[in-house]
Length: 405
Image (cartoon, rainbow, N blue to C red):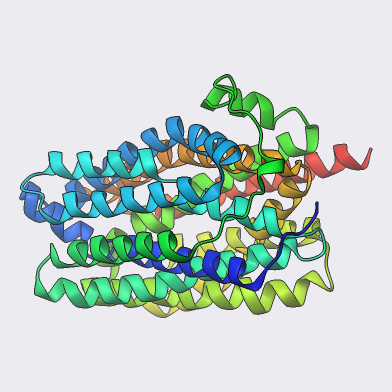
């Protein structure tokens, strides 16, 4: 793969991801409270609706992510990225003025249709990287994602003191600023000579799945990534409800904890990834990462004291190196003019996990914390996540053995 690297390209990719993620993270600390206010219900009911909101977002992303990925291969990364950023701004406006829960579902559907910013950013990294620096560049993008989660939740938790709608207004403004920034300065990374014709047969979830699974190793990797992605949704969809229920945390404390996750993610994706790429192969990093994530989930599930959450978070976030390693392996197997389709297809498949995971995981939390439940176990979603991650590790090892033969 030939590099089209220029410092401004990587800088703007990182900056767009930071701002976009910050806008997304703004809403997490106050979403449970907003749902409770609109539904006039308890935390268990709010968690269930929170899962279905994620379902609305993911169902649209599952359908439209391959379309946007194919369009970025045809018309370039820049127009698709701008469309995605503008869509998220509209979503936040819907949430900011929502008089009832139906408005929340409408906003999430819009965000799902246009939600391709991370996939396009990943395709841009593939455009400008080589096999020597690809893993490190993906580490920087994932670190930018973590930095956004430092800024967003802290700001969201603080703004939540002025009302549950205020963080959504701020997120809408931040996303629109990101759109203006991209419109003014974001350079196109895919040369016209490397673009390909748009194909509706491949621009759909089933077509993307058939295309991405034509290679045995890639097939095993993607199946593993699906299970691991399903498990990781336990953090974004359950964490706020889990800590509020089990340890009586405030919205502000939830925001600070999400910011800590962002700090740890940055350290993992910059310092840890850079240190390990000179000592380990991508395959070894993937295996070690999945083992760390499994240990982290088990510590969350059975934590009896708040202090246990800190070492659990450190171990869990260290395991995030697996995502960077597997992304680098899959990207390196595909040609230049199909990176948009690859990232769009992966976005669609990851959207499938977002479609299924939050409702199921939040429902398991609601069941395990309801007054009528035969057992009180708030850590149930994290126990499920640990089992799924182990299954993903076994699939990964199976794929590596096949590749070796």
